[in-house]
Image 1 (cartoon, rainbow, N blue to C red):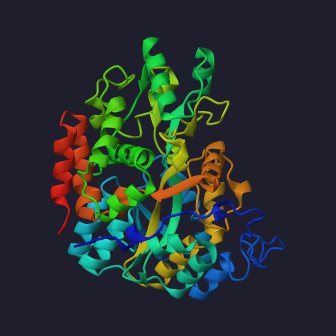
Image 2 (cartoon, rainbow, N blue to C red; image 1 turned 180 degrees about the horizontal axis):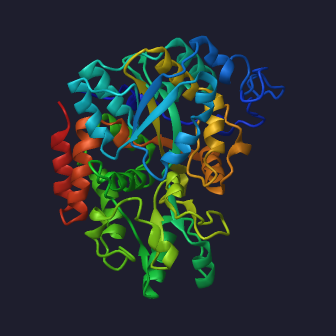
Length: 462
């Protein structure tokens, strides 16, 4: 009976994602708290109470610690930690960071045992819904956070962090999942063109395979969350084959998980990922996808052992240090092509939400900082390698140093973009972060499409 209310919402992401004219008003060397640069909406980043000025209301927090629990692990965690330095400077409090690939499963266990952190970054609105409705451990967001979200975020994003009309968790980062990573040099050397349609993508895959190179590489291992990269494949395919309306019905269970339209989309994915001629370049056979860490999945591109890797914008942080991520660099990404261009440009995305389990001053102060325009800009500047963007309207696009982050912002702001939040993140936890993941692993290791979808459908809570 647990159902994310947010799955019922329209999920269009506004073009305000990359609001022009936004300028960060930092607090490290300025106390004016304002900026002369105004956005189209009449406000500017840092205007009014922002940065240190907004945090002074919590008093001197020297010696206090805020324990954060998250799925964001190395190497992506470093930019997170770096973005907290301003908070420490402003308040005196420190952040105790705990990253784990098992967080989605363990946070429920810890809620039941009373062993909770101060704050958790939840990558699924469905998980937030479960924590709120089943454990009653999540605190409603304080007014300082709610005010920040009303000012700097779109209504849809506040909705994702709400349950039964109450606001609990502010958005944090956002990502674009509809990307294919590749080597621009490898493509240029072989005369390959970036495909504009799905048919061209498949033709290119055949062309690459004919040269004796596996066109695709992939990895789905992610600890207790193993399988999630495969769910993203299906979600992206469904948006392209059946369209956004069917996608919305699927999330709400208005159509069953084993509907023929879902089967068609999964078979379209299988034509790539279950094709021995296509995968798993530089790693192994089809079954190796299930045991290859998602962080390692695309790395054979650097050795010329595979040509393409479908993964989100945040994958930029997983390339080895020194790798040039740019349109003319060692690696870059292109938009996963459409099946039917008349349906617009589907864009699957995701993000994290900041849930708090107590209302101690240091916890509320950190929540407030993370929901501000100031933190969004600090995080952007702390991520020069790319792989992070935000739907915070106070984010200055000039602080997005990486070409992949600028591509993400451009993709989301495209007037033809049809944005949908990651479906598994909006489904009941019994499905979205359990049976869906597990059954996709069974599928990639040999289980057929019908049994896979039937098994997931049978797990949907009544």
